[in-house]
Length: 209
Length: 133
Image (cartoon, rainbow over all chains, first blue to last red; front, side, top):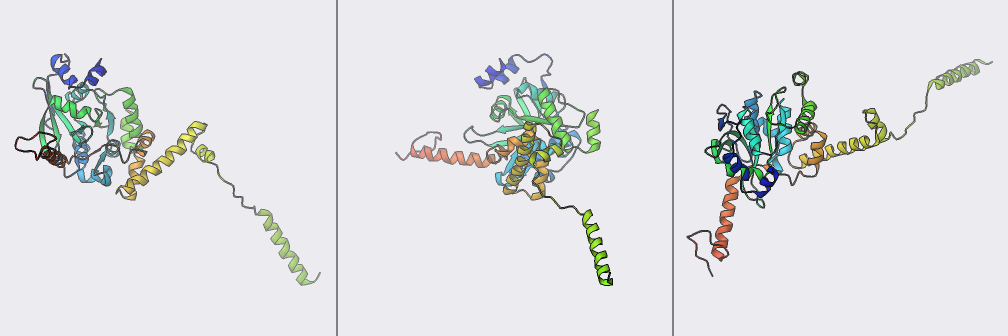
């Protein structure tokens, strides 16, 4: 049913959330303590990554991360390299289900979420990484650390449009041993496999617990 | 025997006995399957996957270097990718979305495009334009 809604477009998930909010999801949440790293030109990827890593307790500067994830010839950062970059800093990077409710639940659980948006059109895309740090179902808004704006307030339906256009891609970067509130088994396995590739022995042992 | 003959005999005997310890070096091709087996990969499909992944990793590393990443960073970045990720990235380095956000540039471009189409009379987005037609 949700697939049909998603295909119908028109920010259907937003409408559904606002008309029939889940009973166990608080109407609003904001992770105001999430750090902010204003991006420099083309560097939204390293800035977003630095944000979630610092929030997880694994601080790294955007410049340092830029060397690990930025692809100069593409003047941007690839999605897979974003997750690999988080891994190299000692975080477990887990993909989230492509549902609006899932990312909101993650925020409610205290985990800021890196999202990929297409701020432009499908045939003229403007790819952009931002960090979802809050939402307000009643007001129909989401809060993002985005670009050079520390607290960007975006209409939830606009967020849904721009996020759907990227395939609803999102991930969280957490310390080993913590898991996202909404991760599904396949994503968790993938995240573990990736983490094992680069983890140092100390980080590995805490992951095993 | 004469002393030179004796000396020669001892020398030849010594050489022959050393020769007995020598083994001819053999050079054969080590097959890919043997390399894979030494890595613990035994089934045919697994070996094929192992080879393909190794080649794909080299491709991705080369692709990253072509796109402006230093050699050491390219190798480190590829090493951090899982096999599945390598397979995905290998063919999409040029086409996959690359988050950047030059949003202002995009908006300016579209603005100019629409302005031109407005002036040419194909669109009527802006109230202040008068088409040339």
